[in-house]
Structures are given as C-alpha cells and as structure tokens.
Image (cartoon, rainbow, N blue to C red):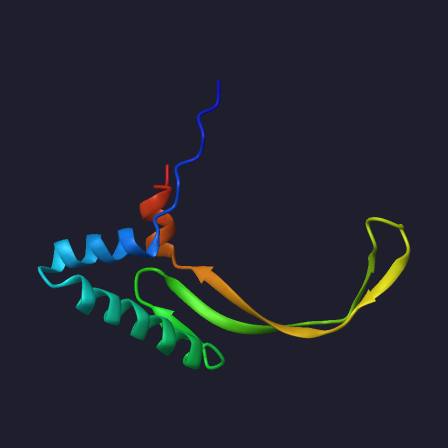
Length: 99
C-alpha cells in the first residue's frame, strides 16, 4: 500500500525552523524570508540564483494550439512570458543521491 505524500512546510514552520537554527527571533526570520522573496521577484528577469538550491529565470512561450477540454474545440493559446525554476545539481544530489 502506498503511503500518503509528506505535507510541505508552511511559512510559519519554515520561520520557526530558521529562528531555532539561527538563534534569532521569529520576526527576524520572517523579515529575512520576505526580503529573500522580494529580491528573487525583482531579479528573476536577469536570472536569480540561490546557491545550492537553484535558479529562477524568465522564459518565453510561443503561441500554440490547444483544446477546450469541455467542448473539444480547438483554441489558440497566446504567447507569454513565464517564470521557471531550475533545480541545482547540489540540491538534486541531496534529495536523490546518485547511484
């Protein structure tokens, strides 16, 4: 029988963990996490790397054909820019060690 996947951590749980590990207050840990997020948002267009974790970048998608799943009618999906995250090798090896 398959086990249920582990629940991902909430922001509060991440803040608690950081505060405990770094010996700081939850307020400072929250400010750090919020500032890291804001910096990533601002720098994503240029490419934002979090060492040991991965890289945020912006990519362009071409317009393409798709189908409306309810009616089956063919539609055109417009071109747009999307944010991508590429996991770094160090993170990949830590989560799934090479054999």
